[in-house]
Image (cartoon, rainbow, N blue to C red; front, side):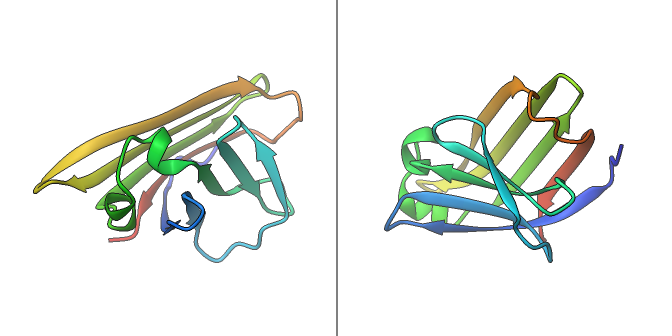
Length: 124
């Protein structure tokens, strides 16, 4: 499994209240809905390449302005034979200070996504 830190970028679209987090330079092939609001994107090898968060302002209890100006994202993606675990930690600017917001999800790996253990961070 790969524990190397990988760089990610993000884009927030306030017209649809969606936050897209993507690993650089990988082509999208398929999606896996993890919850009603969190979708994992995979490449042709079924490797993690991105995360979509729908209704992001509600899910993270943050303003669209804060989501457009995220300070940092730390993302952990761990897939075992039995489960898929995603932990996204966001550092957001809120009223002249920084706040941490978290989105976590775990579900059964009944679609046989390959094993992975990735730690991803926003590009500095």
